[in-house]
Amino acid sequence: MGVRINHNIAALNAWWNLTKTDSAIRKSLEKLSSGYRINRAGDDPAGLVISEKLRANIVGLDQAIRNAEDAISMVQTAEGALTEMNTLLNSIRALALHAANEGANDAEAIAADQAQVDSAVDSIDRIANTTKYAGKYLLNGAAGNSVEIKNSNRVVAASIGNYASTGFVSYQITQKASQALVSLGTGATSAWGYGDLVINGVTVDIASSYSAGQIVSAINATVSGVIAWTSAGGSGTDYIFIKTVAYGTEASLVVTGSAVSGGVAADVGQDIAGTIHGGSATGSGLTLIAATGTFKNMTITINEGYNTTGTHPQYDIYVTAGLLRFVLGANADSNEIATISINSMRANQLGTSTAGSQGLLAIKSGGTYDLTNNAAMAVQIIDEAINDVSTQRATLGAFQKNTLESTISNLGVTRENIQSSESRIRDVDMAKEMVEFTRLQILMQAGTAMLAHANVAPQAILQLLG
Image (tube, rainbow, N blue to C red):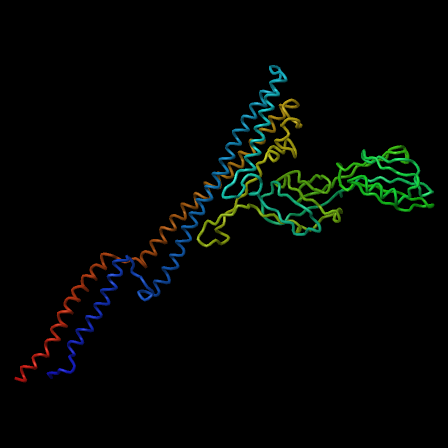
């Protein structure tokens, strides 16, 4: 073999192997110190892509679990307030039963019971109007279902009532609403010299020289809630028409005066009537009120210009069920969103099937069913209110148990399995890596020794030079 001194190939070979060993041992040290098999993309590009996707999923699952836990806290806040309402309603029921025992009670005892009932009902209202979680009101109806008016030219306002589905709501008007209307003839002279008019208790001063137009102006300037206008009749006679601004049976009109035929002219408006999504609906002025079924208490107020009989398009009103939305998954898609609504728990919304629109307020002092008027009916209203509150509590409890707690358990198992997958890809096997590290340490020591030996070997040439 040849002996060379310009290029020490053995030393270069030893140096190159030592360099590779040094690089490998640094990577091994990095893995052992970090605990990860993949510390940078170069360690395993494909594995990095997969593991980052799994990491993103894990982070999403962690947040979904926290979201569900926050939802449980919200539900428990609402349920705690409802529990106190149940306690108050039970105490009110006992008071009503005591007041109904008229044979053993005098007026003072019943009045004392009524005072406690008033205070308890006020407390229920206060709880409903003030219970909040993270700044969101829970029991005043703000967390209930929502209704959106798609065509304000036809529908002025709408409320959700008991409707708890998502979709468009159809309605039909079978009887249009009307205003109270009277007409007064001014006589062939077109002048009214008959003295004053009294309209709904308000006196309108009429001078003997007033024309029909001046009389109309005086009415419109003096009496609120009515509109007057004039129209020419036959044979040179002018007529004055007066109508209420409001619609329905609560809009009444009474006109008295010497110029009125018979001394009195009176009329009462007519309420609207029809159906809401096929169910019967009563009316109050221009407002349809669902009377039965799952749509009960839903209201639709019709625009005055659209007050006509017939079936109307079902695209005017859209209902969204459940205003409280919770993301219970890692991706926030539609399948991972849970919704729940909380009905209004205000006093006027409890016991409405028995007490009507007043609800629980009907048993307060001066109400239709206060303890002095009808304590027995008050008990029925309270029983319905207790059922309303208990039903809402049960709904919240079912949502917590069957949706939230179940979701947390499922998400926990899913997270564990995905974390295991991510660990197999990204985490280092410490025992195996220690074996590799030990091997590299030995190679490092051997390579260093061989490099030293290769560097010394060319010195043997000096012996040839003598």
